[in-house]
Structure formats: C-alpha cells, structure tokens
Length: 237
Length: 181
Length: 181
Image (cartoon, rainbow over all chains, first blue to last red):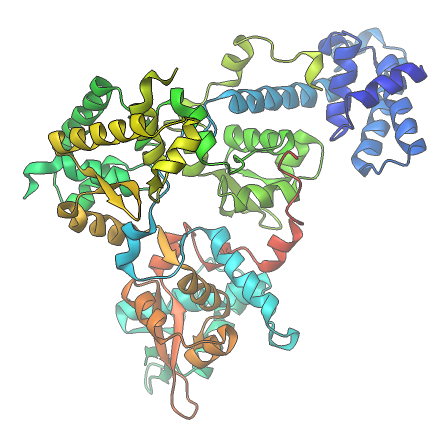
C-alpha cells in the first residue's frame, strides 16, 4: 500500500477532495455510477492519513468529504427493505457532484485547448502616440473591480481614523439619497408620502427616513408643511 | 469625406486594442445603417486573405479585430519575450464553471469545485476575465460573477453561445483520462 | 522556412507598438545580413503605398513602425472619445472616492487623494458620471458631489447597494497562485 501512496504523491498534491476522488475512481478503473464505496473510502482515508503524516497542510474540505464518504459507506451496509426500493442509492450523493465536477474539468480542458490570444495569435500593442492627443495619464479600463481596487489602494494610504466603514447599511442610505435626488431632479419637489411606497417594509421606511435626515443635514432639501392640508413637501435646493 | 469608409475602419481596427463591434464603428462614423460597414469589413477581410500577409481580420467577442496569422507566432514570441498569460488548472476550472453557469455566486462555484475559490476569483477579476455583475437577492446579497469581453477575446469566442455544450465536449472524446488528475 | 520574411516582418511590426530597428529584426530572425530585411521593408512600404489603406510604414527613430495615416486621425480621436470604457487612473480614483464616500465635498476628496482634483471633477461632471447635489452649509459653502445614474450604467449596477464593499473584496483573500510557475 505504501507504494501506492507514493505513487499518488508523484501525481502531485490534490487541489481538493473532488480532485482526489476522481483520481481514485480513475486509478481503480471503476464505474462512477457504481462506485465501490468501501474501497474508495479506504483509499481516500489512507491518503488523508498520509498527508497528515507528511505534515501537508490540507483544507478542512478533505475532512468534510471523509465524513461524507464514511456516512455513505455505513448507509450502504444497512439492509435494504423490499418496500423501500424507491429509495435513492446513497452513492448518488457522491455521483452527482462528481459528474458535475468532471464536466467542469472537461470544460476547462476545452478552454485551455482553444487558440489563445497572446499564445497562438496576437493583436497590436497599442502605441501610446495614437492616444497622446488625449493628454491624459495612464488610461485604464472601466470595471467595477477597477473602481473598488482604486478605492482600496487609496484606503491603504490613509490613516485608520479617516476610514469610513463601508457597511451595506451606509451604502443603502447613499442609495436612497440617490433615488430621492433622481426624483427631485425630475420633479423639483415631492411629498413626504410619495417617498414611501405602500409596500415598503420597516427597513425601507427607516432607510428613507435616514436618507431624508442626511439630506436636510447637508441642506440639499427644504421641508415645508402646508398650513391647511398638512401635507409635508420636500423641495430640492 | 466618407468615401473612404474602408480605410477609416482599417485605421480604427489598427488602433483599437479590443475588438470593435459594428455598433461601435457605426457610432464613431456617425452612420445610420450598418450595410456600408459590413461591406467594408468584408472587403478588408477579402483583401487580407488575398495578400496573405502577416495578419488577418478576425471575428471575435461580437466584433472584429486584426490578429497576426498563427504561422508567425514563433517569430513573434522571439520578439516579445513577455510571459504569456498562463492560467493555472484551478483558475481554468473556476473560469470554466463561471463561463458555463453564469451568472453565478461564489458559494455555487465552491460547491462544484469542493474548495475555496476566493483568491482565484480575485485573480480572475484582476485579469479582467470575470466581472462582478451585481448582487443576488438572497440573504447575504452575495456578489454575482460573469465572464467579460476579454474572456471571449482570450479564448477566441464570438460569443458565449460559441462555447460548446458540455455534451459536445464529452463527445469530443473522453478527455477524462487518468493522467491529468 | 524563411521564404516568407516579408510576412514575418509585417507580423512583427504589427504586434510591436513601438518602432523596430533593423538590428532588432535581424536578431529576432537570426539572420546574418540585413539585405533581405531592407528589401522586405521596402517591399512592404511600396505595398502600403500602392493600396493606400488606413496605415503606412513609417521610418522613425532609426527603426520602422506601422502607423495609421494622418488623414484618419480625426476618426481615431472620435473612437477614443466615444470609447466609454476608458478613464484615466486619476479619474478612477476620484470617482471611487465619490462613489464610496458620497455625498462628499471637494476638499475632502483632495484631502484623501493629496492632490488638486478640480480638473478631474470637471471632466467627471462633463461625462455625467458625477453631479452636484448642492452646497454644504459650512464656511465657503462648498459644492457637494455624488454619483449619477450614468455612473450606475457605466458600471452595470442596478443601484448603489450593488457596489461591492471593500470588506467583500478583502474577504476574497489574496491573489492566489492562479498562475503556473
């Protein structure tokens, strides 16, 4: 058995439990729809033992899979009652994700086998002079990741006390302000009641209220109540 | 002034890094219809084919791009010794899952791969092969990922429909042999 | 194999943005003399002149470069200007600060970036990526900036809530070993 483990090692450390399982299934040349669960579980556990003995760091995912395998193995040992023939083969719990993962692997191989730009074919490196007219500094592509990356780099350069917590709550208030400003830019004014849709939940109502407060604080709006009707109206300043 | 649409388009294709869509060309030239543009592109392509020079007109990522002919790849590699964009197997798997299952959230990717994918997602984002599409309206509002135009260009795909189905890939031959574990 | 020097050189010139010297081409092609290279370059130049397309062979800085013809510069500028997908790094930084810290006044942006942002703010306003919400009631009554609907469209966001938080990006972990060694 130690020979076999050595052989496994030669094939490299597995990226995850799925990789290891697929390796074992192929090595034993077994049918994925009829996995000899006891055999595969044994070999899987031995590999984990080996990784432990070699002090190889491995993710907890390997242990989760070990537990799953053991569980399936014990389920298989339970006697099947005749009236329960409709019950699923416990191994399906393994087969389905394995098939899906194998599909992903094949798709990855297919992608890697395509003609790759920068490897098999090339495009022109754009000459700066073609763009010199714009007079701008380094030009970058616009993408959400570029935006947040730019912001992250800025944050790294400023002191902690200047940091603003960018929790979802704060962004939600900003978002609400943006919506109200959109409305005000269109209409100039809006009644307080119109700000709250009839199906608004408590959270949304609080959010809108916070947004209105913030806007008053920034003197972006003026709030006026009609003497007779009592209707409260927001005016964009 | 516009008599020379073909030359203008050729110049545009020359300076544009990414592939140019017909719509894009249309808006640059301020034209109303695409017929002239299509004709010019096809004339250019024919011309490049007839002269069989160092490059050709390639249809990719929903647009057009001038690319070098593969037979000169060897020489270009002598010229530019930059390390090509190598993508690890793990990253390729993650990318494949996103390509086929997009829009997809991180936990679904990790469910399929069975391992954490955070670092790989970050790298793919940095390389602009994937992008954040928004958030899924489920508890936790997780970010949704999808592939980009650069992804299509890198793998020479006209559009996402150009990807073979997983059934087609399986038919291409059982790629699953024991050596690649 | 080398029968096709002209095409190889064309592919090299095409790929290389900057100009290529004859010596450089010589070393890439591992040739001993420059005669063949000179002949090929002159043949290419003649060809480009004969077809009068969008580009020509330009001799510059002791080397050669394929350049777009000046008469099409106008359209190229148009392409760049219309290109909605590019923005300077400085503008992106400013935009990021406004997106995440809005509503924000100019002096706060400049405090964070450490440089004057007047020009960039104007550009962002012109591009309608940011807007002026009003004035802050503090001495000097500075303008308050925020992002616009166009900003959301540009980044393919439904609303500001879809912006990923820095925390989320950090949680993705470090750039993993997505590249092969």
